[in-house]
Length: 333
Image (cartoon, rainbow, N blue to C red; front, side, top):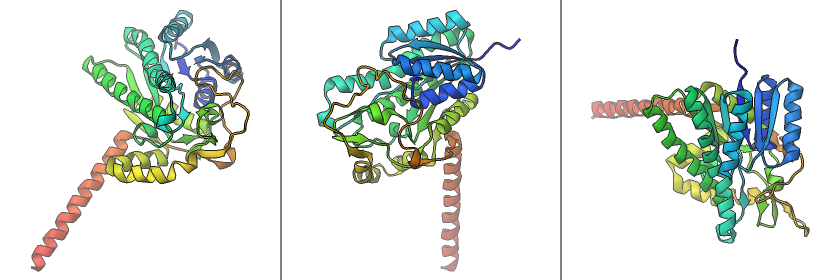
């Protein structure tokens, strides 16, 4: 008898995490939901049950390692094992570097970077014991291509990359069957822009083009199923990553011009705007944000190995072409 598939999703109450929960529920598996906001967790669990899956609600602050380890133990106690752990929880702040306090930098780092470390450390003992399982780190194109006004978030996502690459080498050294993959996302229409802290006097918004969290979630699960080293989701993510690798200084100047105003929405009102940096905004925000009219349908993910093969082929073709032109010129002389 095949045992039921058990998944854990952090940041599951809203946005991409909420969309992931729905997709996993539609597969009929068991899904453990980790986030701080009870209202969003309860709504996500109800959706999973409606789709025919089984849900477990575990209110958890991923910045607290003890809470994350306790959640992992609760999952294994109830369901016996963990097949898939998706580290998706994040926090950000929209601000110039010099306006961000040390406490705010620390909090973004604890959630967005250490939250993924904590989730990985909580999953590994169980997966190592069974020599089976998949860990997915939800990254961003901003892990490669930093942009203005999100220094804390960009730094945290880049740190996740470094941590993940190191762990991957250690798993390879031990010939482990555990699969480790990282997905890098484009701009996504999620509620984070309605509850992220902003010190810019404007409502934050994603740098377009913007994609649906449901489409992105399907690509993340494709990565979980196939296990590439990395998957870059959406053409804008691929372009920004390759552009940074090829011409970082030019991309710096481009971001300075284009990625500043494009993150600024309507002016914030006089009333204090609640944000979720230190405490949850405990209401059901759902998966989608307020940019539906600007959201593109459909997105695909590209495994990094495929990109590198294409780049290598293009390089070889270029060398062959250059050699041919040189030989022809020599003959004419």
